[in-house]
Image (cartoon, rainbow, N blue to C red):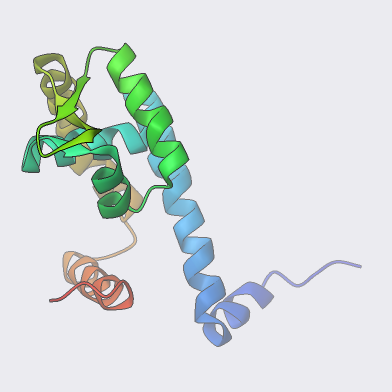
Length: 148
């Protein structure tokens, strides 16, 4: 028995949670593909971006702020450190933890990744007008509890 190809649009209209999960999965796949082409994982890119923006941070702060599981964050930081993109130093404010700091090599790697991001986003969200993209960002911010 063949399923009618028109069912999912109806389901997505009735179940916004399902629609959002499917859209999120499609966007995540596109981000992973783009990241693989750049040689820098999505999580690695986000860590370098945050370190560049706010300065040295503990792995815990990176994990909490970027909403990346702590065990995954350890692997991300290990890989970035092996690649010379970050260094870990004792946190001067808490000797029990380490501060992760972006290196010059990390800044260069981030710059390369950042140059390709606008084109990637344009391609990923090509079905939306610029106004719709702004509206989507606003709505997602509300769902995530981010003050507007």
